[in-house]
Length: 256
Image (cartoon, rainbow, N blue to C red; front, side, top):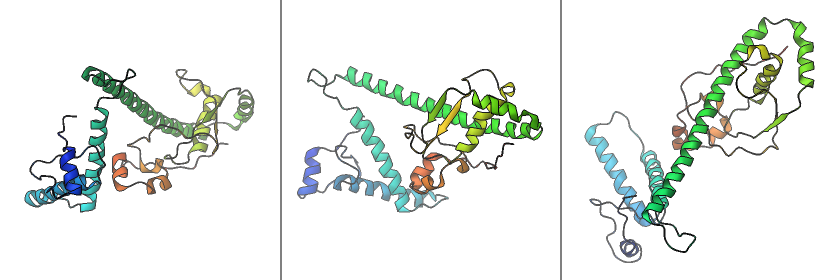
């Protein structure tokens, strides 16, 4: 928000007249335009050269291509542009510009909304870990279970009155059948589940259901992500996922 942006006059002169353009010793972005504008492209070129020289001077133990660093700088510029744009005074309902106090209040409200979304993301991640643990215990439990419980399963299933239509999650591997087994066992074998939390009920998974608006969960094992969805991401987006190195043992589950 405190970044000193390039003046519109200097930017115009560089693009349409004979101005020398950005100063490598006093770098200033033109935050009124995108990262690929002539002025900003020149500034990012300065930063790429600085990274290359610094890597040579400090003998960095790893080597990265110019395209790799270029994509990172592009992403950093987008973040800077988003923050700077959000901090600019907006027109109020009365037709005037926001005061500094009103800008601060708006930014705090936006930050609270982002933190709430991050909390939901963490809860969703914990839910997956919990379901994986429950599934592992169910597999062990079912191996010792007598077949005489089968009529009980049928009767309980017929008593289901409330169902949930689950939103589609594009980034997640197709595990609907396994989640169905967990939910079903929560109804059939309620004696091995803790009484706390929401009551188990049937969930309907369908391609016609709406798609979730929640962001993807990061830090999960690679086996839990949709391979086709991962293939469509850029290297930088994959890096931001922070995919866990933990090996997730994928098993085929059958209920008898």
